[in-house]
Length: 375
Image (cartoon, rainbow, N blue to C red; front, side, top):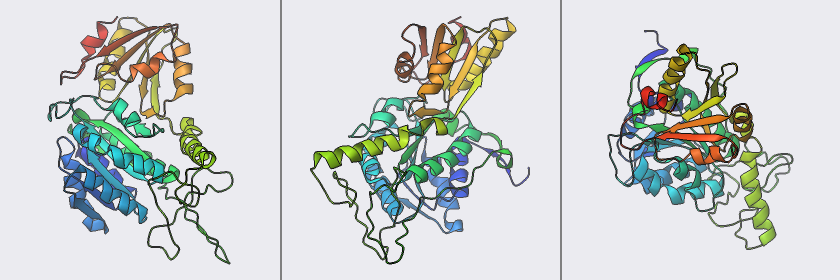
């Protein structure tokens, strides 16, 4: 194999992409099936001048990452279901404090400790709503190892661009299944770094949460800079001081919401496979997309017309995309490895359509045959 060709699993693909796009700090705590991301980062980060640490638990690990990010580093952590629950308070801090971080959730079967070696898309709703303010976050969902590489690259760019946490909703099967990936053949955008504050001359006072003209994302200065940098997890104004002023609070909350929602269609990643005259649309994401592809191929061999939509950006919900694809059919089949989480988002766009759900949460993959039973 060439230097750009690897026989790797999704966890290694995430790790290689993180290094390639400038991640220089990782902290985590061992938890199956995410632990090998920690192992890879421990091996690769020192050779590029980076730092890898094990926290005493998940709470400490994400806290270490947020501190490193506030100092200006690109950071990542990785965990699974029980660990993502422990991240909740710090996720809220990252949203409110506008601290860039990539969080990889290699999902496993829940609830609680569940099954460490069984996969499921258990955390989809938690990733969206697991913060105390209910503000939007970005959630990307890979299908395979190549996606893990591509979407990790995208995750870092989005985290830096919007100064927000970005989740990668992987899965035990994706994270631990090896396949060939040629990274030179993948489209890699230019790495993005957060915009630094220019004090000018004479130097202007730095306001850590002030949005520049025409933008809703504050400029950045690292903690430890020559200028004072103020950070807080409480409600605050542009200057970073705590406030109880309803007008100031309301404007800041709206800005935190709109900075992501105003641009969601620009970073919506998806695959479509359309068939002329099709009146049925299969919508899926993650590992279940592989079974859906096989099902669509077999249906078409039998002269059945079916469209396929594979979502790779789950949140913010790609409303224009879903509205457009659903409007073209009379029936929608949603396939996901849980008892019905993202299907509730689909139902909002299809009040007059037939919605069928195929899901399971027993640790087993959904098979093409199970999908075909709906036809």
